[in-house]
Length: 199
Image (cartoon, rainbow, N blue to C red; front, side):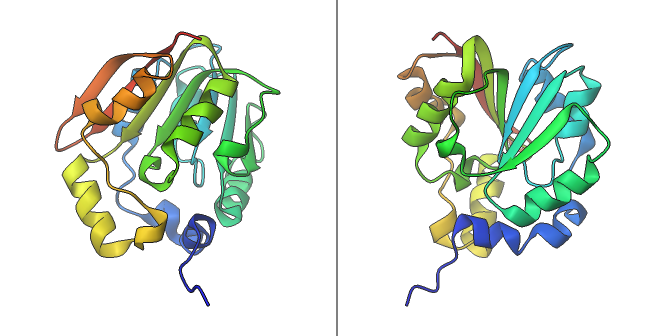
């Protein structure tokens, strides 16, 4: 019998205390929204949204539409409760790689979640289905790569995470799939790469 948790099961178990974790930093959330180019009227897809911690930063930047997607039902349940009265924000519980192209977005952001997308090639394919040509994507973390990798090695089952390579190295797969990379940040305090989908 396989006792290893799935990504959904692992994060479901974390949902009740997710908002209380010390890693959430409002100033970094604002910086991520800026790096992602979220502005007045933006339609933002937040992949691996958890309990919707990034939504306030997107709303403050003027986003007209936010769809948060997460594979963990417990995370989505809490996110929906938090934003029940905000008409610009919706949430969906599904695997990001199963997203269909029924709606397009001009911004796609993956914040504090990239290592948990185990099939990066499938993730990129999914993003290209829903990101408008000339739309921006951003992968970002509110801590440096070494800190993230050390934490995941000690506290997260290997079956639900993968090591982060340098931002430059991670971005190469996206470059090979139609993205023009114009953001690369790899410091002890923040990690990010992103750019424009050339379509």
